[in-house]
Length: 269
Image (cartoon, rainbow, N blue to C red; front, side, top):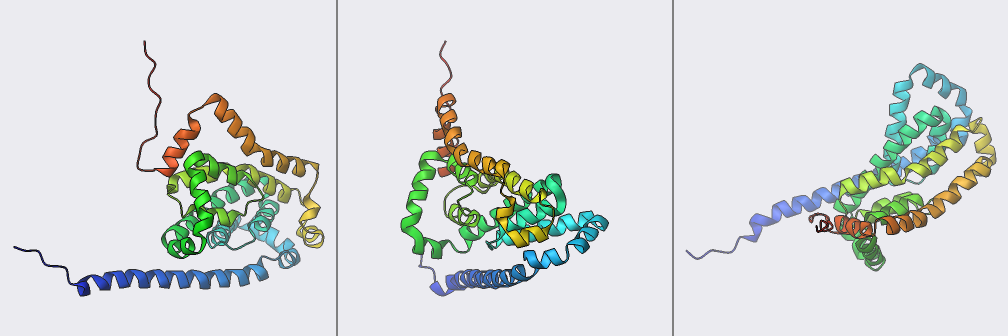
């Protein structure tokens, strides 16, 4: 029996539904980002929070668990929607919860939000971003092929690299979600510690709103950022000296997720 070609009419509805679903989700995200920007400017502004500082502290003392969950949800929403302001929010959480709880909240919430942005870039906006930024993405693919997961680790250690751009750009690569998750969790930890410490050392939000972030800069904070700046280079040199094959193994595991890492041959007796 000669096989007949499939009727295109039978295949078009699922494709159209999938495309339509992507458009709906994309439009919903754009609306959510717009609403988030508006709300963040009003309710997360330093002036607004400084006026209600005492009431916020009393609320946290009465409902500590609810306050922590609310902070997590707000942070995940801000970072997941790629809304600017994560640095200021980190300072506020450090001031509000102290160093220990603030570090725990920001560390896990930032990684979860980054992973959501990573997935959105990969499955919702991939075609549009690749068509617009194909030339700029090619160097990123080459660096991942040569340095693998270390490249993401280095990006996470650099405070000058925008947080949301890393999330969106890495979503367009072949890196696995789990690899992105744990490297981001580890790589963002030093910078998170610096920002949370700076926020926890702040006497009041009124001081921050009046003097700006510059009021938090002291010798310890400057030294911490300087160490963060040179850490990627130092770590790479140590890895190359002690583990010569580590860079190759990381590259193969990140750039080719379906293949197992290359292991060295066993010693011959």
